[in-house]
Length: 202
Image (cartoon, rainbow, N blue to C red; front, side):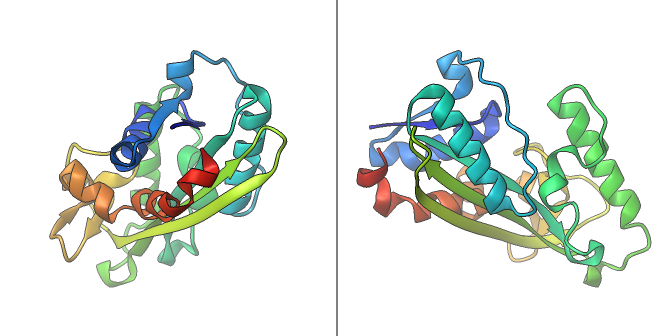
């Protein structure tokens, strides 16, 4: 079985591949296809809306069933920001690494002076699977809770992973072993929710 994941982010592809691979699914990213599909605008107010927009757009362009996700960080002390704007929160950076660094710096600046007890946050992932004719055949949502710390720690993961401290693990998301992160993560929870639906999806 083969499933196209509509992202050029190799980290996301690897996370999804690690979960679905043992279930007999060959996970293919856009880079694997060599497909130059324009990235659609994501004007939705929720992760679910943006995931559906992406899934439908890429499925129509490729003529294949496609899985797309929209994910980000919600910080309670910031009223849920950065939310759907997580990937480009700072609005600067020409590479993913530069954007991540700028986003993390902005987040820490906005939380300056906020006590740790009020820095509760969660990663959210909404997944949508759509067919080439625009029909949504599956959706799922997962969350991963923690607290935002002042200093980035860890080399695994990407984005805000080095700042989300997981209290019961005693480390940040970026310090978790990749297998353990997949077990706990928002994307892991969302992808695993799709496993029972795989025969209908692929």
